[in-house]
Length: 74
Image (cartoon, rainbow, N blue to C red; front, side, top):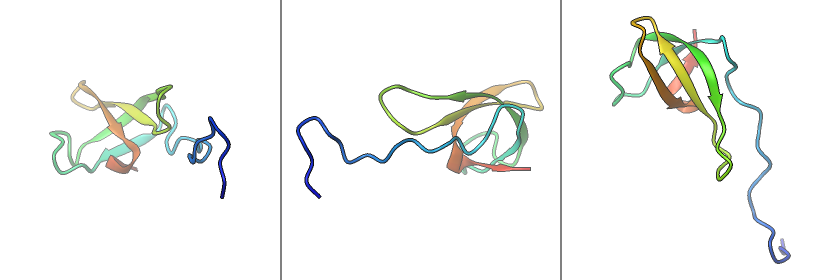
């Protein structure tokens, strides 16, 4: 595949894996919230990359921002 000047090889952004209001479980082994349930309160999009992050409020009232692969639906 040949690219013209200014084109990138990135695929178009896919839809977010989770939506605001989804109940999720934290899976990341290095995250202090591992094994805890929370609710997605914001889908974070950054202009310079195409990877969604998710702000999650946990049952203890704390909030953390995680990647989709660090979460699963409850």
